[in-house]
Image (cartoon, rainbow, N blue to C red; front, side):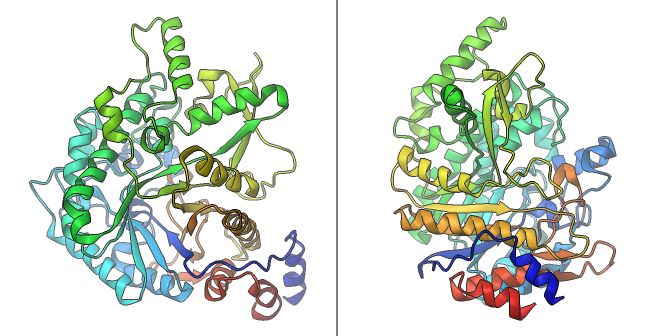
Length: 495
């Protein structure tokens, strides 16, 4: 065992002795569909993911679903015990829209759903852990999807009503809210060709952009409701969580193409965080031109009115950043099959690739490791939007998890935490780091085949036992010391 541990040290480029400020916070995350199970318990109704994994070809969800998942609806105390064992400052979880509002509307509020989330929130506070709550992590009520879902302009009103219910029920104890998780994925991936994401509608030309605008209007409605009604009482903060891939040209000749592709990738940030609001002007012009050339009488990217621009602009209290990986960009050739269409690469004829030096030793084919990409995004946020607070609201590494020895996951988080430390030392206002995920989760189109959890969930055990991996012990040691000084001791002495 000692030999294996010594060999694992060689995976690290160097041991970082940097310390994090006392105000910096460490967290971990999950989402409701991915861990709760109890999909039809009490008066809960189906979400789009229930429908997608039940009715669609089983291959779409890798022959799995979230019907039971980690069984956290019943075993939430074990999850919170794991969070406490790690010493987390906060735990990010999401609320299932249909568990709170079975009809999707506020005409019926589920007593059972309210009880469940009250117990979860109170259990966290009793353990000295702050709740960070995501209102929407892709679980749209199926009956709202039947009316068009995120492509129906009324969705912003439906979401505002839902948000108001959550603020009213839980706002006295929840001080940090995320309205919507990763609109890039929930819109663009769900409407891309051969989509593996619910609701699984193949309409990459228009559906994703309709969803994009309506998502941002919905977020803005929720933020403004909180700002006017609840902030004076509770003093919390609200934002949106954007997944961003750092992108740059593969060569100096392709620098401009890299910048444009990145601007399209971060489409959801400009309307909220930029000084002028609205879509990036150059991207808006390109898509309008593409639409005209394709025979459309309108731009496939719906324009914001002046009133809508002002309504969405400035609706944040911090920048929520989800980061996993990066890409290099070059001009596509005739032989290239445009990959990652949900990033909009087909709009610019850009082909996304990686550097040969970027590791990809996990079971997630798209997760190539480029820690510097995280710092590049942090630098970009400050340069583009000013000195605003940034919370890394999600970052993680998935592997097969068969033997439980997740040393690659340790390396991944060590190297990315080092980039956060460097950013802080450079004057960037990063205040938190959120590991995805606390426990193993149902990973959407990957089902149960990928293990991001610091804690293993034994899916073969009816009791769904939670078992700490080495990465859990590593993260707990870092949190306790607020430093990487513990790394040498942890590897040699504690395992």
